Amino acid sequence: MDTTTQEDLNAVIRQHSEWLAQQLHVQRENLFPPDANKAMRKFTSGEAAGLLGVNDSYLRKLHLDGKGPQPEMTAGNRRLYSAENIQELRILLEKTARKPGDYLPGRRDGDHLQIIGVMNFKGGSGKTTTSAHLAQWLALQGYRVLGIDLDPQASFTALHGVQPEFDLPSGGTLYDAIRYEDPAPITDVIRKTYIPNLDLIPGNLELMEFEHETPRALAQGHAGLFFFRVREALEAVDGDYDVVVIDCPPQLGFLTMSALSAATGVLVTIHPEMLDVMSMSQFLRMTADLMDVIADSGADMSHDWMRYVLTRYEPADAPQTRIVAFLRTMYGDDVLNAPMLKSTAISDAGLTKQTLYEVERGAFTRSTYDRAMESLNALNEEVAGLIQKTWGRDHE
Image (cartoon, rainbow, N blue to C red):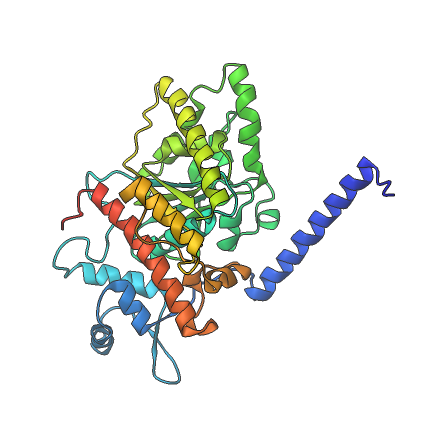
């Protein structure tokens, strides 16, 4: 019979936590030597041309004419472009574009900041995978993006090369900027990533302090309108970004409600399995009830758009296909046309804490990689279309 005392169990759990954190740190150093920092891979000329929306032959001509950044040349005389090169080319091409925004599609005068909350309170719905790929794709397309990890489990943070146990020993999350006592400027917790145009506010377990402190502050009459705290913090950097992508925690707590109050657009991730759909039904009901309470307090809970994202979808799975048809019948255009397909390429990339945009095509069979990439790009392009429509540029 196991006679482990409570004190012994606490010691075991703490020891296991420290062992695991140490091994994850070692793994990171092995994956990203010599300084344990991630770096974005180089893109082939064909990939760079695809990101820019031009022909490869045009990029070759720019290179031969000595215009723009000079790519790296391989031993086989192939051109490789860094993400920084691609951004420099965007700036160059925008100067001679047929119309504004062809290569730099971000905000113009009068456009409001797009804040996209990615949410669902069921774990495994593809929330972090959706958030990370969307944030990186938008940045590679020339949008100025801020990714915020509001999930204390911090998977979005880990995907971007930050290990909370080692890299955030004394704060550094959004909690610092939204806490009730002595909040820090949000600029103090924003860090650059290895991808141009993408900044990060990481997460860790410290975010749970907001969930614990808000009820006490409300009871003492000090919390005020707690659901405005994320929005008010973001106001300080409104002019620095085009899009904010928030990976919300898998629960309807104070963090999620504050993010929902700040959001201009909402993506609800759905894995098309019956138990997940049943869970989403409860999520939507609870969300509506809480939004009513917040609206009664004087908050404007309107959003530019809300859409459902089908994730980890297997078209050959008959039950999933029936559920997808059911959801499309119920919600119509509120379900994005492009699903995120279930793919070993996406899941295998995650094993090394990477998104598919960071992995070389040669790491997978061509058909597996291309199928997954087409799925992700179609989904992200559809979201970008919603952003552009909100800015009144859907017919340009």
